[in-house]
Length: 367
Image (cartoon, rainbow, N blue to C red; front, side, top):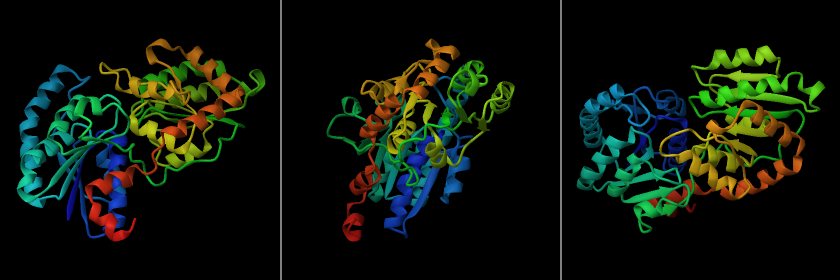
């Protein structure tokens, strides 16, 4: 049996696919698992590191990119269909599963049109409260839509949608309550960093100068900057003499979660799911976008008291610094968020999805 996981672009999409692939491989070692991604995405780095074969198609991006990039994408789309068809007819996968991102579009679309000829199934994962354009299209031809959060059923119809939660890696597990001294702030803006969050934190650092002496709080920072912004952020921490670990990309996320007293991060679905899984307090600063996907995601958590929400365009460095200091001194609020956020954890998401797609495997394994 061959199974395709198609998509990528960000670590969130890839890790969801890897979580499913790892569990499927454990249940059925002879299953041939292949990932289909696009050139230039995080999948080029992360999928091989996870031990799975990766095929790449040429497709660009559409939202939030210059007109010239959109025109190039329009030219690449027909060729990506040809590449997708070639892979589909070569391997004839039993299941094609779209994990999100532009790379999922040609593969899932072509699978929806052709895989019935060899008895294949097509499904997608919707990671956001409000589905984006790609999945709105693919959801119409997919047999099943697995949703991380409630909301997708309004778009795709309740019969097609199953709310399972978002798959997270096996290494992401519930943690003991966070240490308070030093109060460790773990900052990350997704797999490629977030210049907006980086800039907010840099602006906030001046208010943390000599924090132990002036503020009565011992602060430590762990900061994933992304490739492009590393030098600027590292220089800022050095300038203000802050106790910090600054990295372009952090592979040991579970260890950093364990050290963290507070997270400052974007509000992508995979990030939210990992925050819920580990049970950490967080300040969500959603990505600024026309469709406001991350803002809607973060609001779901903030309304229940499970996190703080701050909009990037309406927050200053001084306000962020004050919020961090307030939370560092207010242990009861941290504890409240830690307890509340776990209500969004779905540790059985992987098995719920795979049980639907491969019921016979679970019957044989007794899982």
